Amino acid sequence: MNAPPRSPERASAPRTERSPTRSLVLWFPDWPVTAYLREPSATAAAKAGAPTAVFERNVVIACSSAARDQGVRRGQRRRDAQAVCPRLVVIAADDARDHRAFSPVVTQIEQLAPGVQIVRAGLCALRARGPARYYGGEAEAAHVLLAVLAEQGITGVRVGVADGPFAAEQAARAARADAPVRVVPEGESASFLAPLPISVIDASPGMPSAAAGGELAGLLSRLGVHTLGGFAAMEVDRVRERFSEPGVRKHALASGRDSHPVQPRTPPPELHRSVAFEPPLELAEQIAFGMRIAADEFVAGLGAVDLVCTELRVELTGDRGERSERVWLHPASFDAAAVVDRVRWQLAALREAQGTFGSGVTGVRISPEAVDEASHHVRGLFGAGPDERVHHALSRVQAMLGHRSVVTPVIGGGRWLAERQVPVPWGDRAVTAKERSRPWPGSLPDPLPATVFPEPRLVEVTDIAGSVVSVGEREVLSAPPAHLEAAGRRRRIDAWAGPWPISERGWDPLRGRRAHRFQIVDAEGAAWLLICEAGEWRAEGRYD
Image 1 (cartoon, rainbow, N blue to C red):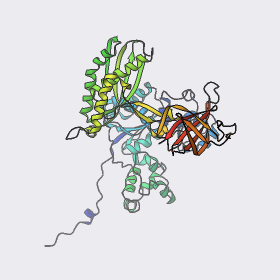
Image 2 (cartoon, rainbow, N blue to C red; image 1 turned 90 degrees about the vertical axis):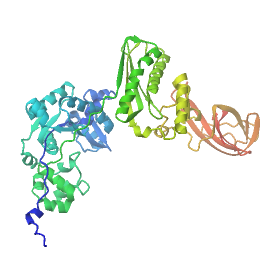
Image 3 (cartoon, one colour; image 1 turned 45 degrees about the horizontal axis):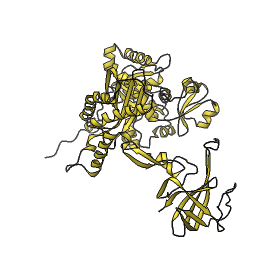
Image 4 (cartoon, helix red, strand yellow; image 1 turned 90 degrees about the horizontal axis):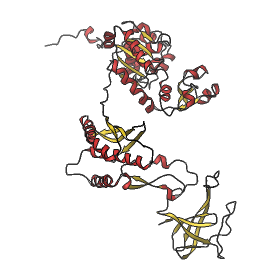
């Protein structure tokens, strides 16, 4: 039996697409500048309104209105921006800073209109239907959000409402300072987008890139297509042949058929815990006892979302307004007992500071600074490994004797070998490779001596005639070294190298130092690192 022929209309029927969802987009112009100004570390000049620009790879990515008035523009090279504005405050880009400042803003928006999607720091979207029905219209909802943001000191925000997030974002960017809300009527997104330049199809953040590495706009411009309307007029089949599915997706955006709905973020749970003390407490043991229930709830709250805390922030508030804040680390993860210990250790450190925290404690707040998946910290099937048993034992000693009772030596920065050995309390972050690699002019390069004397040992280096060798003003030796006398023994020097000068604090007559390093090998094959300072020889270390 022959099957019935397929209908040509059915065979070529296009795939159905969801209709665009009415979306509301809030755009915060020059958010990297705003985020920097909201940081406590912002310079006084920037806070006072001086021209400010944020640079990434020496290119302007955002600038303040004062900088724009001086001729600074996005995309400028740093030298060009400083040429037109010599007083420009230069700020390095910091994506973490931008998101850190943007997160509380989004939380404030979610209090009025839940379901916010963060496209990037400074740009967020939400579905317009719910806020519009609650506040009596799309424009009314936008003005309510702007009013709340203005109360928080955030001004200059633009709001766009249209069919789909892409068109709503372009509407927000088309809004003006005197009319910060731009509403594109339903069904008119295509006509609104038509005159916009084709470059916005690639410049819009959060949009998928074209098949040609995100350079679709440049290629279309070379083909004579300069607007979104011109791109939308092209046949879908021709676009698919040349640019594949990513090109079809951008063709739909240019046509006002943005079928991707807003994807709301899931607000993070409230993981912090706070305890208030009335009347204020002064004894560390009383405060630690009062924190036990809060610590249990803190750890249980993290466990409810399958997380553990690896970095803990402890904030203490005094009766006279004093504040103490510190981030504590843990080699594994914090349990309730470890949280209480950190609170007690921080209080002990404040008491040792003699007057830093002179009144009683009225409140303690604990919050996770960094978390990890709980599955990464599950104990083994056959018990804990040796590392965990060692950590448990050392933590018990710390809990009984104090935070600095157990330390581990790590290599730090510095010019002198003795100061490069840094004792770090167990559980704290060790000195990172970046900190060790900071420039230390005069520091000894690798390989370092295996034995380092805590205090350089007094030795004597003499020439063949028995006179002490000295270093002249131009780094010239009085005579070649011939003998080394150390620990009561006299050794012949077979090889030597140096001198290498070390100069510290030349501007300070009291603390300034100038010395010369030498490496020598004696007749027994032992290699020494020596220092000659003010005519006196000392051994800093030995190459074992």
